[in-house]
Length: 279
Image (tube, rainbow, N blue to C red; front, top):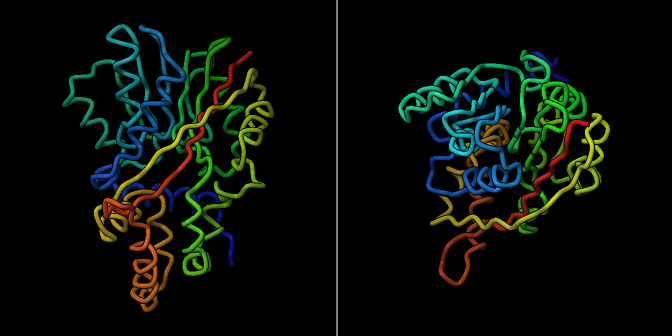
């Protein structure tokens, strides 16, 4: 497979998220919201705090952070996808949130002042980055002393997803998603792995917690819509058009077998929250 230069990789990821701006976290499945809520509770920004939300998307963490810091605080959200930023900025204005600022910016190297923020959050972002340790090092410089950074990543996936591996793995574009967040031997495969990343960036007191999240889908069409409403969309788009229908039908047949006693399709995930401090 031909490697895509990083600039091309970044543009493809931005384009991916711009393409899902309307459906992102908006297909009737509670996913990003519950994760963001737990992350915000974990970092616990004080009223009046200055907070940076990296990869803010459609505001799942951003707006919860704004409520936590109150009118005297300030929350800056950054995202690399211009349409995502524009939509989230509109939402902030519609909510009357004068304490929220949303900007287009690269998570690898935010162009923001050093020592500016009490808290930094990044919910389901860090495994998209080409060099997570370098990104965390840059983020550390943006924190005040003893400021907190908190990230969310996948813990254990529902093992039933492995039922799909032989169908979709051949199409996974390794030039864009260089790290598989589900790889047990990778940097995101364990609490210890993510905590090592934190320490390698000069952060201290790294610690992790986990919680279970159950996703429920009415049918395979809703499951499919959900997978196309976030980063997994790129996997579907990597399948050649003349093969897509056949692959999708096979995937649907297997996913339909995930129904619980109530008749809903379910998917069980363990979500990891990892926090650390600037010394």
